[in-house]
Each structure stands twice: as structure tokens, then as C-alpha cells.
Amino acid sequence: MDAPLIGSFSRSRSLSQRAHSLIPGGSHTYAKGDDQYPLLAPGFIARGRGCRVWDVDGNEFIEYGMGLRTVGLGHAHPAVIAAVREGLPLGSNFTRPSHLEAECAEQFLNLIDRAEMVKFSKDGSDATSGAVRLARAYTGRDLIALCADQPFFSVDDWFIGTTAMNAGVPDAVKQLSVLFPYGDLTAVEIMFDSRPNQIAAVILEAARDRDPPTGYLAALRALCHKHGALFILDEMITGFRWHNGGAQKYYDVEPDLSAFGKALGNGFAISALAGKREYMRLGGLDHTDRPRVFLLSTTHGAETHALMAAMATMDVYQQEPVIAHLFRQGERLRQGLDHSIARHGLANHVAILGKPCCLAYKTLGPDFQPSQAFRSLLLQETIKRGVLMPSLIVGYAHGDGDIDHTIEAVDAALDVYGRALSDGVEKHLVGRPSQIVYRAYNSP
Image 1 (tube, helix red, strand yellow):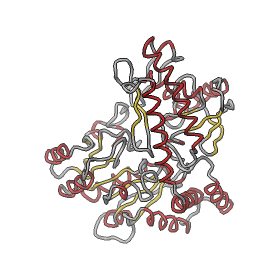
Image 2 (cartoon, one colour):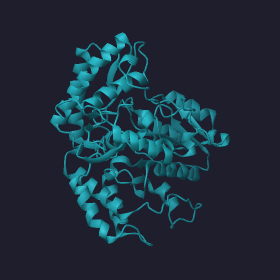
Image 3 (cartoon, one colour):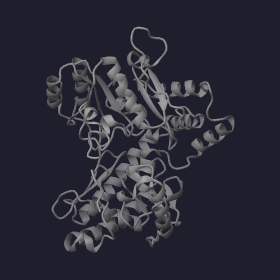
């Protein structure tokens, strides 16, 4: 990896034609689609280990945001793989619960100690949608308030109906979701006052690319309770990244319900809906004072190998300094990239955003506006140099050498970026720019 990659992606391109003929979009996750990357990009990954991946053409990359943030410890982490390998010969799914369901729940609640009950499922959308249903059942209300400044909560209609890509969502369902801006308590108060006794819950991520204003989360929670609504935290990204106990522990706030996933299984499919017993019990068998809630009931929700992966992952977080490593390496990466950006005189065009444990970047064109073309160019040039960085989110497997290589790759890419600002991005970008996911129509 000392020399830049040539960038031969012939096998990927051939496979892409087959994939698009068989799979809508060519992949099973929109964020992994061809439209999210420049033309000169790996199309299909063959294997990964640590923070490295190899595509089907044999090209090697340092990867960031691994597995859409699901792989926090690194690909094929030995402890996780050993646990899964031990469990697979014992069977993966039965007609009654596995003992692992109780053991994993106990371990999870020891970490996420502000919750009292948990139910596992397979993906984040299951968990957030379960929280929404529970809030509606508990309050007897229909409206859900979502943070407008955060990009994704669920594949289900209550969220997708708020995006530009809302075809297929009935208008009546769209009317059941309302939006509020992050950090603005006055706007939330107005939202509640204009819809008295209608809002079942407020859902948001505790933080994204900046910390919340001082006291904001606690005040928002109090505002929800004042108006009879539940306070839900989406911890898909912040969980197992901000703190072992989640952002709720990091920011010292107690949500009524919270949803976890992503890094919980280090790439294996498992998510969790957690919360206070008063609400979670409605999905159980013991209460008689309220109607039963069909909370989460997925055939594969408690596959034993996924539970074992989660338990092994949580063990590593409890026994090793994972979170400290993420903050340390992220800060090291940020400082190096900030230095390169300043050296190239590009501080008005490229910016590193977010907490060290969850970095992203912003790309602006000559007009100082966000530019997909310049984002694509930066991706293209770093890919050439062996770095795959749709984000700059580090994992436990990123060592000092990986960070150094990344800084060098971005530094070289910034040289091209600077020239493109002067003589036109189209002279440097091969093919079309990437596009945002939430668009009503595809481009011709």
C-alpha cells in the first residue's frame, strides 16, 4: 500500500451489471449503492480484516465507517468470531427461547444501566419503530415528532414519509409525523402547544456532529413529560461509540425508551429496544391494566450466533479501552487533516466535523456551497491512494500507521481538490458525481 492504487475495478464493473439486473439498486442498502460513490471506486468487497478490506479485484483499502458503523472493533475480530464459531454447531433458532436471550439481555442492561428492560431484533428500524408503536400505545396519541436535522431513523413509513423519497407512503401516514429543529427548545414548545394532547413521542439522536447545548437533552425530556409525551433516544450511532453506557450515560440523561444497534454485534445483525419497565411491560405477558402491544416479534430476532456476537462484543468493550481508543485515534486523525487542509489553503472548502469518535467531512465548491461533485472527487482521489472513506469514523482496529497513511492520502487528494477549484472539477472527476439518497427521481 506504499504506492497509490492503479484503480482497476474490472471485476467490480462486470459484477455490477449482473447485480443491477437482479437487485433493485444493485445492493441491499441504499448507502452502499453505486450512486453514493464516484465511478472510480470498488464496487464489491471480498473480505475484511481489522480496518482493511479487499475488493473483488484484489485492491486493498483502509476503511472508515466500517459496515455503515456496525463494525466498531474491526472486521473479523478474533473474540467475536470465536464466540460465533463456538455457537454455530449448537443451532441458531429454536421453537422456544434460547438461554442466551436472558443472558445477553442481562449483560446489555448492565451496560445500558438507565434502561430496565430490553428486547432484541435484527436492525435499527425494528427497534425505533417498536419504540414509536409503544409510545403511541402508552399515550393513546398518534403523532410522532422527529428531529429534522438528523438524516435517518427508520425504513418504515413514519420516517420515510418525511423525506423526498416518499413514494408509496400514504398521505394520511405522512401527516402523523412532525419535525422539529435540533437544539431549539422554543420550537418544540410551540410544536406541542399547536398540537395539544396529540404528540405521543419525541425521537432524536442525542448528538450528531456537535454536542447538544448545555442542558438541552434534560430540558427536552422535561418538556416531553410536561406535555405527556415520551422521550426516545436513537442510539444507533452514539451507542458503543460515545460511552459504554451510550450517549444517555455520556450526557447524563434518562430516556423513556432508546434504540441500539450498529456496533452492538460488531457487524452481526442485532438491535435492541430498551427502556423503562413502565413502557416496555406493555409488550409482555404480565400486565392486565392496558391493551397488549405487538412490540417486536421477529423470527430471526434472537438468532443465537448474533446474541453470542453481541455478548463477545460487549465483553471487549468492558475489558478493553475501546471508547478511549476511538477518541484518541479520531482526534489524531482530525488534527492531521486540519493541518493538511490549512496547508493547502482550503479551510473555506473542506472541513472535518463531529466528535473524534465519529468524524465526518464537508466538501464545498467554488461557490462555498456543499458539492457532491467535490465530495466525489475527494473520494476518488483517496480511493486511488488506498483509503475508502465515505466518513472518517475510526474503529478499534485503526492503528497509528493507518491514521498516518490516511492523512498522507487525504493530503495528496487535497492537492487535486485545490486545482479543481481553479480549473473545474469536471477536468479531474472521472464520470458523474455521487448523489444524495433522498431524491424523488433518479437522474437520466
